Length: 136
View (cartoon, helix red, strand yellow):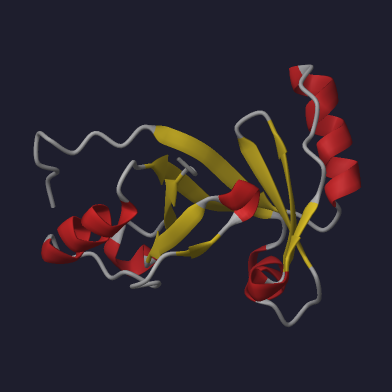
């Protein structure tokens, strides 16, 4: 699958699934010198989220959430790579036409008031890809 020339989605962030936001955010603050955002609970996704710079940390609310199962299977590790778009609806359509499986056909609320959707790893080189549209 090759991207058309008009597709130019900049990297928005990378996300790491963790068992403790406090421990990991403290570590990354020391490494980067940046300050973490206030943790945010996303009940619908079953996670607590905080950012240190362009790294998002995902802590499961319980072991039965998708991130909880992810950590159980793989341990704390890279969870997804996110690309920013100004028009998430158009990107969903474009990517579906190019053979990507979209997990969320309708964008849903994400951290920081963003709209998000995910592309299934089986169609994205084995990596979970998130599309992010920042609020206007």
